[in-house]
Structures are given as structure tokens and as C-alpha cells.
Image: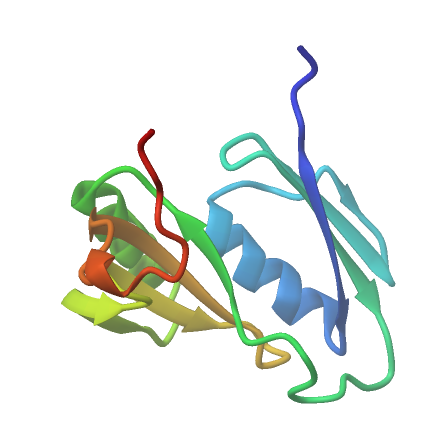
Length: 138
């Protein structure tokens, strides 16, 4: 079976600031870095992230935020340390209820206001009785 990799292409207004942010976000160097373009080939999570220089980025739009789900609180803590070491402003949440789940998470925002979370799900569904689709047993 082929390995799937998600591709995300972001418009950015300052390629240098954005590359610095994503180096810190994912802890890897870009595999391609030009005056108007950068590409990160991230092994885990499998992601092809490209940054495309533009003159302006419209704030808001349909995108709420982006995220990386990890397997443990220790991995969230590792991201917090990486972001702190890189001088990124961050916001942390522990045992927070979000999306009908309990999570630990850290939030950072890239230079063009794209919000990212690194999170672990500790309780998968805090309200299973409210599910609209019920499974049935015959």
C-alpha cells in the first residue's frame, strides 16, 4: 500500500519569517528554499508543506486553524519546549474539553496569522449519548 502524504500550500507575506516559524513548528529544515518559495518535506506527520510568497494574505476566510495530533502529552511538552526555545509566542491548555474530547494542547500562530495546535486526545468522546448516528445491533 502506498504511503499517503498530505499537501498544504500556504501563501505567506514574509518568506524568511515563515521559514523560521515552520522550522520551529516541525523541527526540520526546508528541502527547498528560494526567494519566493519554500518546501518542507515532513516525515511525521507525513506532510508536504509549501510556502508561496505573495504580496498580501487575506485574514480569516474559511480556515479555522491547522493542527497536528500526537500520541502523548510528552510529545505536546516536547513541542512546547521547541517553540519556547525558538522564541515563539504560545498558549497552552491542559485537560481542556474541546470538540467533545479532553485534550492537552499548545497553540502557536505563524507570521500570517494561521493558528496551529499540537494536541493529544486523552478522552475521545465526552458525550457519546449525544451522537446523532446510533449504531444498531441486529
